[in-house]
Each structure stands twice: as C-alpha cells, then as structure tokens.
Length: 79
Image (cartoon, rainbow, N blue to C red):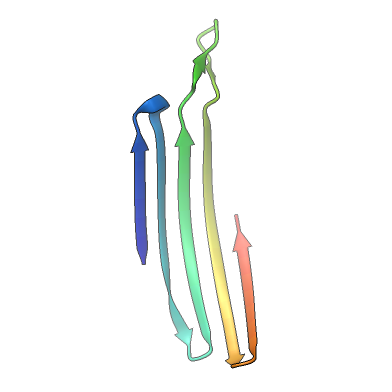
C-alpha cells in the first residue's frame, strides 16, 4: 500500500491519496486508489464569494489478468 498527504499554506491547498494493491489469485492482481485534492480560492469577489476554489475526489480500481507470459489484460474503472 501507499499513503500520501500534502499541504500548501498558499491558498489552503491539500492533497491526499491512499492505495492498496496485491495479488488476488495466481493470475489476477488488483489495486484500489482513493484520492482527494482541494485548492483554496485565489481571489475574493466583491460580495465575499471565493473565486478559484476547487475540490476533486476520486476512486480508481484496476484489475490485471495475466493468464500467460504473452497475454496481459488490464481493466480500469474510475469514479
């Protein structure tokens, strides 16, 4: 597995990700990754609203099927 976190005090930006991978069967392995990134506003509008702020969350799952030395099939889904 892997875990990563970042914080930038400029505009309050943060990033986090975690993944877990490994074999499921002799010929099948998998990985699941979750991630979240947020970026603070760079500007403030005249009405007090925040301009430029964004947030992205995602989950990715990957399966790798390797039945022979000459054949690899990768299936990936992301939300």
